[in-house]
Amino acid sequence: MREVVQGDVTSRLAFCCADARRASKAVREGLHPRKDTLPTFERFEEAQTACSERIVVIDAYASGAAGYDWRSHAPPEALCNVAPYRPPVAIGAAGGIVTRRQGAETEVLLIFRRGLWDLPKGKGKKNENARQCALREAREELGVREVRLGPPLGATVYGYDVHTRRGGYAYAVKTTHWFHMTTTAERFIPQAEEDITDVAWFAWDEAVRRTGFEVFRRHMMRIRGRIA
Picture 1 (cartoon, rainbow, N blue to C red):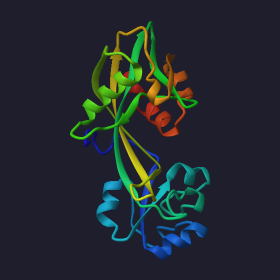
Picture 2 (cartoon, helix red, strand yellow):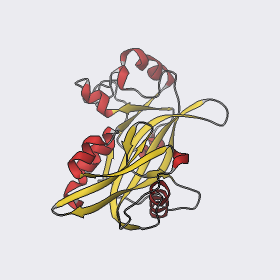
Picture 3 (cartoon, rainbow, N blue to C red):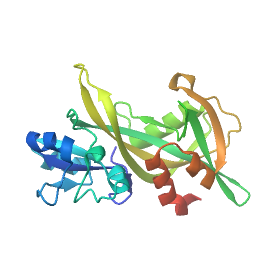
């Protein structure tokens, strides 16, 4: 799903090459990439190519909240996959930022899932490109066919733990490609099998405030000038 340009990504994560000893020590002391001359990357694909041993995933937002630049110091609480070590794996997804005009206001369509307001999105299927995935997921989660696909709006990157087929854990690095979408539908059927219980329009600023994931909020603010 290589559908976005390099500068069009809002990422919560950064990546650092480390051997097993440094990764184990980082659980207690964090990482000091510049001091220890450890290769660091903002793109997971670059880290995969360059790192011969372990890739430590850094939550750049958590590092910043603790008062550090992750390039110089990533404290233990900003390390995502070291206690114990879970190898990072790439996950591809796509979704839609669905808007409409109401007078002078731009409104955004949000879904309510598992206690949080969210944007319609989902993982890609085999042989499905990002545009196909985004449109399918938006239609399924909103429960309508009347969704029109527009131009790409960049991507977001964040992570979470996942089970492996062998019963262990890995750390998912999820890249979600976003597209501008519109709809003429007035009623929606939330996708119950995805635990979606509500669909609602919100004014742009209110939608940003309500969206339950910080990386999505930052991306929405970043692209606001294109569609709001």
